[in-house]
Length: 405
Image 1 (cartoon, helix red, strand yellow):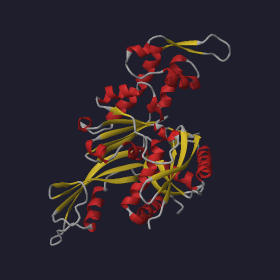
Image 2 (spheres, one colour; image 1 turned 135 degrees about the vertical axis):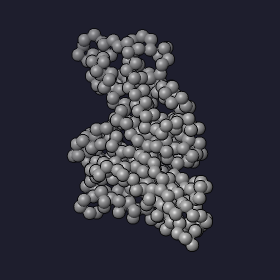
Image 3 (cartoon, helix red, strand yellow; image 1 turned 135 degrees about the horizontal axis):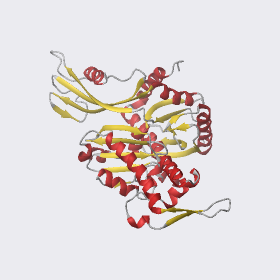
Image 4 (cartoon, rainbow, N blue to C red; image 1 turned 180 degrees about the vertical axis):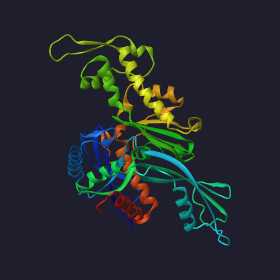
């Protein structure tokens, strides 16, 4: 009889650290058992800036998650992000030996190794090798053409890599809690598992996760990843711009952004003024709504344009479904209208995640990455029965970790 599995997702973000505990039942449904969350400290643009502070945040989230879920957590699926992480596509070609024209796993390993042999900076390390498409004697296949006869096998892969030491620091932080790391996942790939189903991936969709200090993105075309990346611009930059332009404190700028701001170009949303009360008894500060909205729109437009720059040429015209906005900053007023204008595509917010035991806060798009890690773990279970994928991951972590496991 199939047994239930427990998976844990850990997101160390610029604004929050979240740990989600879920039970994967024998029927492959997911039930959220609990969550631990704390405000992040020591993280800048998705990367560790103050190690001790980050470790304390992870420990706090762990204790809360264990308390709520009544589960002793031993390992996690860890999301990572940062502008140093890059996704590229590469194709490998392998000619089958004479007299051995039936494609088998050995041939796949050969072509996979060739496809993965790309030049990356010496300080970088691989995060993902994700199969996109296969071709056998010029005929395209969406899955591995095992057992078919042919002479020339081609494999197209999406390869994600980033700076070794920065990824090591995230792993080191988790292992010193101490927790094991089941796998390392580029954050937008996790978010996409919540936002997109198979049909949307086939039709083409762009997922944009707008966090506090980064904007992650992943593009799916024809059911496979076509591009992924991270730009170092997020919601905190919008708040800081408001602070610099209006001279109100950053904390108040954040509140004004959320309560009064609008990123759309609708003239009706920019009429009048916003009054910000002064705590010291001075007259309230008056801010033109037009100025406020122009500041918000300008910074978010920059983030979206940077995403466009990271996509393959002509990719937007191949997207059949549209753009999915997620992340905490995706909830700003008018951001959907702005995205529609920049990308010239339909814009959506993610639907409620298909899991049980969900509390109200899980409907919030800022938890897409953490929940996506659970779905990612499910996919690994489905693709590698018996947890065969974990051995590969532990080997990968050994390469990251200079002192062994």
